[in-house]
Image (cartoon, rainbow, N blue to C red; front, side):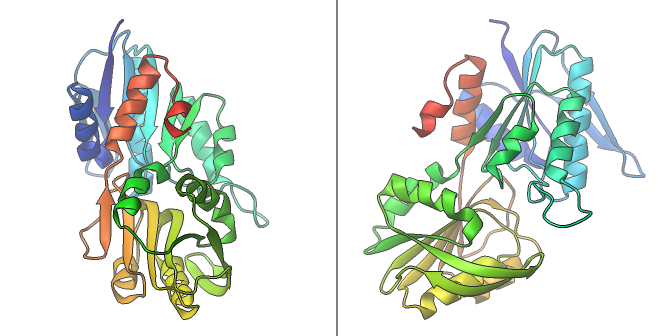
Length: 308
């Protein structure tokens, strides 16, 4: 076989190094700089001719810079005669605008998909897309990995006396149901009304949480407003404890303050994005999962069987 190479953008260097360590391959070199006006300059520092390339880059904050850096690196690799380019995007930014929910608004998830394809990628590997239908925005293969599989062993290790799964909103029911089925647990739903972006008002709890240890499941946590208010509502309904699992720690605005001062007992996240340390936040690594997926993609093995 012709072999493969792994590159990283500046947003995911530590993550990429961990993946490379697991696969026992070196992290390939690229010279990424910024001009004084902020423009991004990229030079691939080694030959990729005829090689299968995996480019690791999350498009979290600063989202615009990281996305543009990813596109420029793809262009550089394509012009360097790489045989194939797989964009490994642990956190796929701009995914929250996945449909036309109001007049005169964009569908940015589709726009980003078009930009990535135009740049020249052949495949996408990502985790917990905000909406599963975003896979259909691409005309190339997309592997949308389930981050929840990473949380299973950790939750089991907690030995909770009376656990139950909760979806923090109606939109996350399918994700919570999948997780509840894997753990063999019942599920409740937090019904909320969102008045405007990043502001959520919890309205009601659908289901019984009296004396339960609640585990909320979500794809991301941004300002943490939804999760903290949901935790308060759940405890007001008699929940014994409330922990939350969210794959992507966006954690913007007053997120850390909300988490530290709120009723949420623990937040478990992954390292798809960099996050600061906090006594209430536990970070689990998904690098081993991505490493295994990269190995399987390169060897044309099934990815779906990992989650069966």
